[in-house]
Amino acid sequence: MTGFLGLTSLVFYIIVGWLPAILVEAGYPAATAGTLHGVLQLATAVPGLILGPMVRRMKDQRGIAIAVSLATCLSLLGLWQCPSLAMLWVALFGFGAGAAFILGLTFVSLRTSHSQQAAALSGMAQCLGYSLAAAGPPLAGLAHDATGGWEVALACCAVATVLMAVLGRSAGRAATI
Image (cartoon, rainbow, N blue to C red; front, side, top):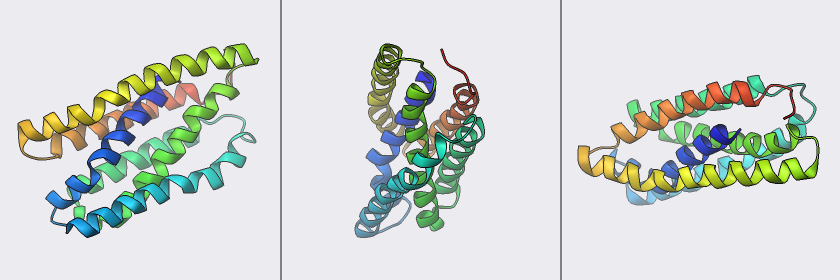
């Protein structure tokens, strides 16, 4: 659960922090890049309307954890390889990453049997997860400066989402700690 939430946070904050710069470098005007950044933010809210009520009724969440991780991966690969469809990739990223965030936080309550366990697991997952996430944007910026493009940062984020899918398969199984 900690790894799933940590990688979700890492990828999310890299893209939220650098999306306008990525889009401008891909040829979009700054105003359009800003609008697409707003679309990303809006798209992250949509899973809360759909996923929240649905997750608790599911026996396990492995399938949805894998699906949203891979959707996020697809959006990153699309943004990297076909930036002309940025509206699609940005909306897909927002939806996938927003859903992964909800799942990561929901796993804490679904996988524990009492409030003390939930508090301890939440503290560990969020502390380690957000510590990992805090390093992401500066490292992505360094990668950009070292290579002159966003390819390495986007590729690393895509790899992280594949690892998210693997960890989501484990975190999403119906079991308590």
